Length: 571
Ligand code: GAP
Image (cartoon, rainbow, N blue to C red):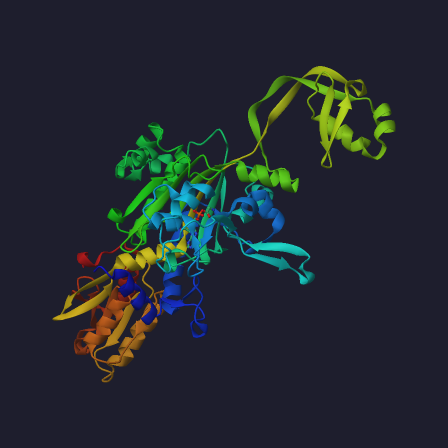
């Protein structure tokens, strides 16, 4: 199936998974609508993510606005640095991502090249839109954030968030209090993020509005041993380390214990979330052979990250696609927001026993300071309390102003004091999931064709926990009370929280095909034997085998088939 992408997209549009946005106005690249089945499947993927992070890890979900004021993105560095390298085709005038043009022309290392290097590299490459050779054209930076103004009159500049993460950083002090001032703790968020991608041509893979599911886990900077690491210590999965990439070697399996001990993964926290991500991606239906974890090379590592890995899923059309990023973001974000907002973003870590330490303290001469600095004297007094004395005086910052206080305005005393703990800036471990890419991978990998009753059957082999419709209920005939029994069974399933679709139209074979194509894992048929012995058939989508079971067992059995605690093959 070389054209699997076209087939998946055709099915997705026809059956209500994914539609182009505002199609009747011509659609806009980089935006998609989730149709009825797509929205349901996406919700199921998101809820599996919640099962892992909110229920499993105990990290509560928060919800921040998708617009934030400029100051947030000045501090985070997005305003200055969140840009892609762009160029414009001199022939067809299309805007292009310069690194994609270079890669299309076989240039290696394009994503980390500087503008001048890219300018030289793409001169002989062809335009990705019109196919003509570009020649020498300028490469420039294009900031990917969507800008807007908050309130009338453009008083305040705002931006649509390019990641959900910043909301959790700026809420740090509130979160810390919520978690009763103890590390480690985590907050998670699922929501829309926005990036004004230059030339999004990859369907659900590169969108201008997409859903991220991010966890920010705040840990002690010197304690990166995960308290529950034992859970994944022996978990084995394919890693494509930086060393292997440099040697051009493929991914090889490692246990998480081994990878941390050999220094391949920076610490247990990162390793723990790599393994958890592997487990979750398998759960939603990604095949193990199509999943690997690739480490960022030093020159592609974000400025804030100490280590970063991408969970990459192999697509027939797009090759290896980054679907989840797992990074140790260090204290970069909290430090930046503390400096820009003036709000301390530290945690007080109490020692087991108070410690006695020698400290040099500045005792200001208030009568002189008061006369000399008048209204600022109080603030200067407080700033001197934590300042470092030097031979010529002490340098302090008061309300953004750097002030030098000469040594004759204070006295320095050495004293022994008792301290109970330290203020530390936590480090952040961040697993960041792209829900749309996960959904596309699920659809592509589930797509299959086989032969049923001498005809080609299109089947989405979705794992039951992500299938939008979980069971179909068919009366063999639309009469003789078979339809009434089928409706009662549908109702009993709905009461159990199962999404059951009742269908009584057309030949039974056609009804099966319709459900196979949208990935419904099970179908129940009510036939004339039902009236005699109160049994129905349950059909398995993948094997097309059927078993007869008693009507009163249906709701429980279907629930356990969906959650995976019963396997159809065991019936
Ligand atoms: N907070 C970290 C962060 O945002 P990222 O690698 O830029 O990291 C995380 O994004 C995930 O979001 C990616 O692995 C990808 O799945 C998804 N993502 C990023 N840009 C996207 C886009 N334009 N369209 C769809 N998904 C995207």
